[in-house]
Length: 269
Length: 326
Image (tube, rainbow over the protein chains, first blue to last red):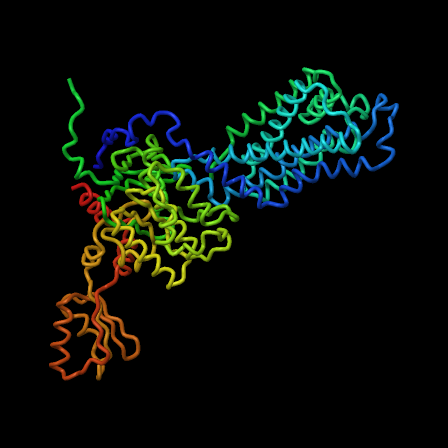
């Protein structure tokens, strides 16, 4: 019947000596283009970069929030809201903005189209993660600057501890976003689930009630959620101590679980 | 010792080879034993009704899917294992794929050209496709015809040896469709091989040197459009309005006549060239004039309906297979 044996494949057509990094320009080209596209999304930019510093500013303008409180160990509410605002930008970019972009790319066949080129769709994924990470970072810097200049919140004293805590928190948020992008078949689902997940995450991050002000039992539970732990780690580093290993460990563990799930579940089309 | 054997037939090797291709989705075969080969420089059509397995077949050629059985070679390379190299020499326009809504034509062309080792100059490519005034326009604001021209440009931007065009003109108005057809002819004229997926017979008849007709996942026929039409038992269609009524029995008794249809005074007769001769003789003898006499070849459309209607009939499929293997 049909010919059973496939012919041996021809030797690679690539020019000899191409070796590793044979298509070195694909990722920078994708990154550059996606950056320009990202700047054309005023909604995403507002929620990731503008909203968290704005929220901190509004809360900081409430006089009672600027008074030291005995319940908070002599600290002011506005001090506690700096790490919360930092978390807010990460959660918004990871869980709200990025999944809807990525599921949209999949829905429109953009990832599939890229698979038919020498570039790979993971270049697009990488670009999105990098861009959202950078946008969060910009927001973090704004929040810290506003806190310092407007409300006299001290800048993180334990910088060596603060940077890893920020990086770890951002990875947790972005990898959770990647799970959402992997699991949601359509943009609508991604947005709905993202919004539903948003509120518990904001709660555990301490947006309505700073984690430090929560009753003991609740606080112990919240400290084992990804953003509850991250919030504590950020706060500890900001106040000058090394972030607790438990908090860092909990955040890292969640990141690993999210990233592993995303990698296994992600579909290009 | 077997040192590397010189490839004596390297030149004669078809650019794209598909052999015994089989692909299942959830246990249901979507492509079942399809074989064909595409020679360098031709426009090869993959034809079939919707859901016949055309797109799955070319997705295996593009390396987007891994065959369950059989094999595919593009310039001697496996599209899955040799993805990077195959992607360098095979451009693609995918069915129903889009771009980022806010990306501009220029940005898309520029980004895609960065993926390739020997990219074409994207500005002159854009000009060739009539997009030079659209470089700053976002994808979401392009018309259907402009989008398809951009997709053709993206398929060509890597200076490929072959392009796969999947349902290129679906959804375009007749004018835009004709423009795109001319572009496809230009592509071939520039030396690039074209693998064209379509369900439009007019498109295949106009553009393709050879076509593979796929139906129900199987190869139903393979050949030039003219061959497929002449394979029909009744390749000629005669239509006329006789000045006096003619008995239908007499018409269907004409040599080569396969079917007679009467609609009011108008008669349509399917047959061969012989039928035409015999009909003219009969009319002359009876002194009947044939008003509005039209004699034409059956279209690929007719041949296609014949072929796909009979897809499950084993003999024709087997014949197509054998023909393909010789």
